[in-house]
Length: 298
Image (cartoon, rainbow, N blue to C red; front, side, top):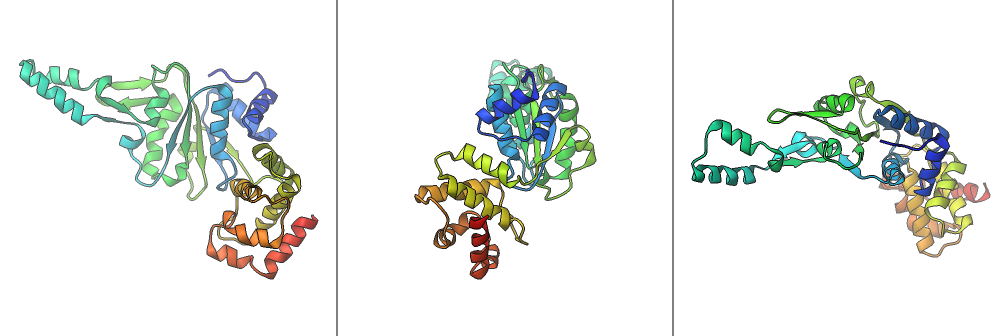
């Protein structure tokens, strides 16, 4: 995959896709492109891991292929399966023509025609006209057995299908794996990847993200909301708000034609940023008033 000529150019291309990347993340992504290595991104939910894959696919002018991981994910949903219904029809045709024997059936039924390609196989398909960006999202939600299946793909950009043999990418995709660290991912998988931790951004960086993504929001509103979310993250909450919640909150308040924060606006829209009853109760009343006062003054 041909990437940008420099780290600064990569950061510029991401910015054009409304993604604000710090130097460390831009370096990791640039090296992943140059070395053709998978990039493993860890961090809390909502800090921009998934959106990076979308931004780099747009910046490179290529396809984004996404595999959303979940408990119980297996090969038939992630890699491939055979179209048994069409194979059965073909088998009946072979029987009717009188040309059916074991070798003929195997040769005719197990071909690319009857192969249903799932995201992983789509990403390394040699017939692709251009290499894709493959996002393996929230790998920590998949079972450990599925991690083991990924090792061949991540190391060699190939997949072995017993009936067909080994399928290898003619041009490797850029693979981005994300994890919210709900469980520890095995070292064998990490060793095949470059690694980068995405932390919650500083106030200035988060404000820059808000300005980039929601330019129509009032500057005073954007600054106050960002400052308030930064203070919320210092509390012992069940679900700490991420950057995505900051963006949603600013967008919601802007849709309500708010130019700045006040207590009524915060109370009316608190569910946009705090997604559990316990967290909302923890910051209600005097505590919320004090947080707002500090954010507005800040």
